[in-house]
Amino acid sequence: MASEGASGKGLERPEESYVVVRFQMVERPKFQAELLRPESWAGAQRLAVGGLFRLETSDAAFSGFAKILAITPLGSRPPPVAGEVTGRFRSFTRRLTTVAFDGAAAPLVGTPHH
Image (cartoon, rainbow, N blue to C red; front, side, top):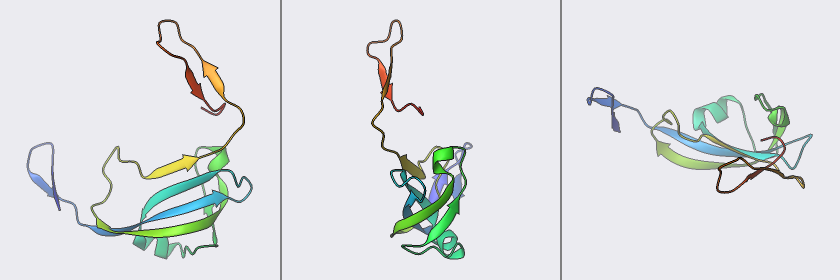
């Protein structure tokens, strides 16, 4: 599949098979995530449903061992481009923080981490 470069000329982006890896953190089961990764990466990591893998992120809640809940094949697609979402992280909390700004139409509501 070709995509347009900044110069307007087509740049080839070879297609590769991708999977979505859904997992939960072992020490924090309420923290779950999904990652879009090449199938070759998942194979090299020897990922399997029910297995564990080590995850390192800048967010302490998503660093440590993760248990794989599902691996879903997506088929072939071009590699992700800059700005494309390649992971979704979810956490559950009973606490929400509300922040109001002068001049804003509505306050922002989020978890204490954000």
